[in-house]
Amino acid sequence: MENIFEKDINIDEYKPESRGVQAYKRLSLLIGIFIIYTVSFEFLTYFWLIKKNIFNIYLQPRAYLFVGIGVFCICLSVLNLVLYLGITRVLENCTIEEKLDYNFCVYKKSKRKKNNNVLTAIACNYARMGNKEGCAQALSFLSKEYHPKILTDLKKWIESDEATFDISLLKLRKRGAGTTASSFMLLIIAIGVFSSCLSSSDIIYSGLSDSIISIIGIIQAGAWLYITMYIIGFLIYILGRNSIFTGAHFLRNYRVGIMLIAILILLFYCSINPIVQYTFESKPEENDSSTEYSSDIYNEDSYDYDYGNDYDYDYEESYDDSYPAEIDIMNEMIVLCNYLQKNGVIDDFKVELGYSAKGDVKGTVAEDSDYVYVLYDNGTKEDENGNECIELVLEAEPLDDSGNSLGQQEAKLMGFYLVNLSTDEVIDEHKTTW
Image (cartoon, rainbow, N blue to C red):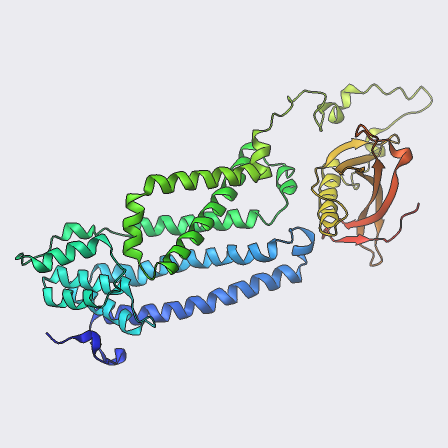
């Protein structure tokens, strides 16, 4: 038998009628298209986010990296489905000879001198055809340190008197369900990575139910677990010199240990994820007076106002529905806190609404070893362009030796900030006096 592995063959002219060769050419085209559309998608995403100033207003600094990872996962999910529909399904309907042609094209176009994965696949194709000589030729080009279990089965068959190879040893399987599952998994990972671009406080105080918040936390932890395991597997693959068949055998033999490692990594991610920690925190009862948002605040009947007989109070006329509601003020405080955090004014924050002595809305947002930081609502104000903004004042109340605040009387004025009610853009007014 002629040794085709050592011959110089022009793939463009090699068996043009073979569906295996056509599938390989389609694969090369799809990979090229994937690279172009991934780069374009990444560019357009970053361009839009930067143009809308979303990175600075809503997202954490790590988002500059995480957005790219998330977009890549989405593109990879699409590629996974396209390859299955355009390549894998075609190959599943090909003859063994056509599958051999496909693998042979991959081998010839490979830039690696020793492509153990493809050579093993070619050897398996020859074995299914009952061609011992072709199988032996393919195996002769494998690296000496490469010893997957299937290699032992193939060598035993070559040395035996059996004319046909036991195909059950190859563990052939359909890939449709696996492909769909992996594409769906990549989309879930993208969601986890994208949600990691937000501050934990933004998610916790977004108004979502605790169950949804916990699901987001678990998705985040699962996404980074998958990425971590993928990086570890990729490094093993690179260091193992192309030994995917050996790796598959390793996974089968040590799957329990690998699962335990994965669980430990998942628990570690959950332990450092504030969203997951929030899920398992004990929360006050709905009618508990220590709750940040007491129902008494919103219950008009709980206040008995006596305006006297000389003054006829009209609630509808006095109420200004154009002024931001408390939930809107809290949202603008969260926007400002993200800004302050990025500029190093405060660290991690948590907005707890309350009222000043004058009845204005205030929010205790952060605390360090020396101060507790409080934001005060100072009403609405127009910026230099005439846009309606809410003005928030940041004060730092010093702490005593016991860690208790000395109150607003001793507070240090940190700054005045405008938050655009339409765009959430933050404007530092650069003043620290009233």
